[in-house]
Length: 258
Image (cartoon, rainbow, N blue to C red):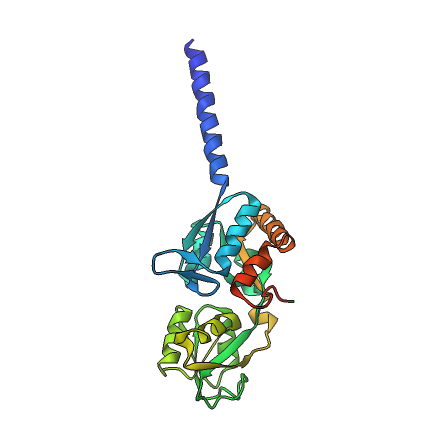
């Protein structure tokens, strides 16, 4: 009897462990910044919103898993993924060769060009190195836009900021001559009361070696199963209309790009 009870107890324990593992498999922990509207933003009441967040939820629905979001400062987001704080990064992270050394990426889920913005009374006429010579340019640090600015605008002062909101505040208050970021981010800011100070100077032709190949979802190296599931989900929401529904909620054009 005791042997039978021990066997039954062991079987129950195994079943509980399997059940717990399956439950865990049904949750996908997603890292995001929460400070990059309209892609991802943490509201005053602590809720995440934005294109990245809605896309993440749509992908989780397609994969039949539950999304669990974790906010993380941008400059530590890849180390946090590597440390197991979350399973994937969905935070408008551009796919670059440099980042591929640290993480694996899905296919892109959008691709938009960078741009330069400046005060409305600026004398800046274009986006070239010569146009911005002698100017102070604000840009979010540890981004493709910072890398491009640092490598291209060598006759300018390139000032990094922890978040987009911080360089926008300095630009609005006259502490910067210009800023460089994704056109969608800067255009949304220009369309807001806070961005009335400034105007779009022009878009920058992307350099693939710096700007990458569009925004993708980052996963830990070697997690091919998760990467392929996410790729399949991206393809599915593009095909079934869910992607367009989310796109049209935020933008007047297709951000998926060419």
